[in-house]
Image (cartoon, rainbow, N blue to C red; front, side):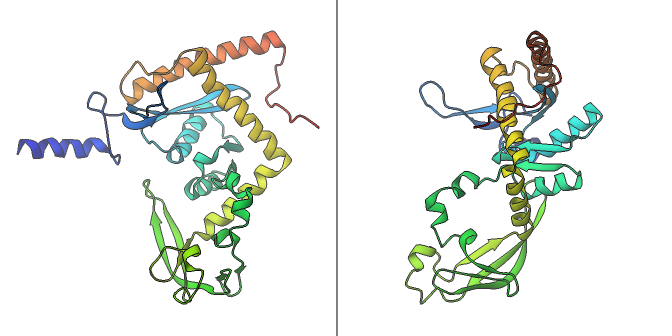
Length: 290
């Protein structure tokens, strides 16, 4: 009975997570970056999120989620509540890409400049020449079919839903190829014992293609450049220059307060630096012209 009661308390403490620290129930065990001996570190920690505009930290949030995907929308809501305004453009790296975030930004009437997770891979020759990838297969919108390199068709099979950890439901269309058994190239196409199936979220494909067009435009390139400089630069200054590599407090609220204090210090130093360099009013770094 004592052990059952202990496990009941543990299940209530998890709050949708798969781990927590006994000395800090709000923290989650996460895979930290390797130490100087290149040993992977699994330690209790928090996911620190920063929103940066014009080189100033304008948003800070603490999440117990290991994935950045589930931390984007809560950060934007906190920023809107704290700043009193909603930013029109949201620039993020590939770790934040998901259908939930795309649709969430659409509902908030914010333009998403999110780098697709397959963006770098899609530019390689190996990716472009792989005819067995769903992205490289010809799609017939009228018949709603994909055509494999051997001329067989992936026809509509059924529609299902996929639920994320946060409860978001995405509509998934399943296509099945009924000519796999006699196909001589099956070993190159799939490891399935039967016919190959491909699972497609049509909404996600459309949103990803739109985001790809935006980030490859001139404005998208400028915004992506500034995301790398300003956001990664803020993390670099906090961790390397300020030595902020470990939270000294426990609990979500205490950790958030500690992070905000560091953000205040960063902004004061940034203000002093801009005043010294006389670059007030400059919020974006421009692309170098060839």
